[in-house]
Amino acid sequence: MDDLTLLGTAVALGMDAFAVGAAVAAGLERLTFRHTFRLTWHFGLFQSLMTFLGWLGGAGLSAFLFGMNDWIAFGLLLALGVNMIRESMSDEERTDRFDPTRGWSLVGLSVATSIDALAVGVSLSLIGMTILKPALLIGITALLMTFAAMRLGRRAGSHLGQWAERAGGIVLILVGFRILLLNSGQ
Image (cartoon, rainbow, N blue to C red; front, side, top):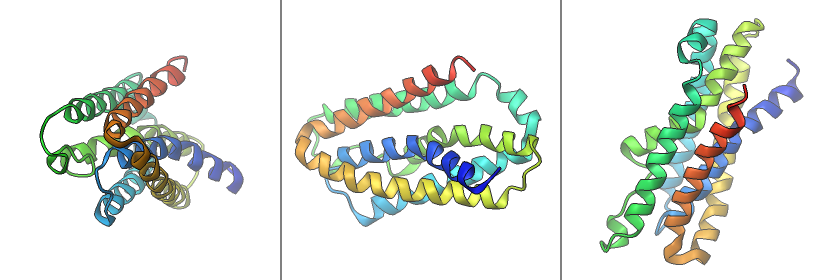
């Protein structure tokens, strides 16, 4: 696989991270360095790790998860999106609200946005490609795309006001449906 194809693959894999990063940033009351660091670091790390795990597992891992990986990503994004919408309708102070850049929500988002990288890793294994360069490039690309998305999402969030968290939840749900619809024919 040439470098341009590899970069295109990394950008394509980073699109879900971009969409989710923008939605999360828009839904936060105040975007801090910690929010940005946690989400960008985890999205980049999980993209790299899932690519590597897919490569290690090769065809065996693909056969085990066959047909389930899209549903896993969809389920995680649906649950997190519904939770964001539910929390946005709560009467509690916004500072005490759901923070998707912490805890199990962060892990769930990281897995959901990187599950396609698992399949790419399997593919790389099957064509006999070494994994270090692709895994690093995929992870760094996801990290950079998430960082840019959080900056853009924050600007959108300031214009959306109290509806930003709901919009973020809706975007997560739509990304989940997109994963199902695009990959259902494969």
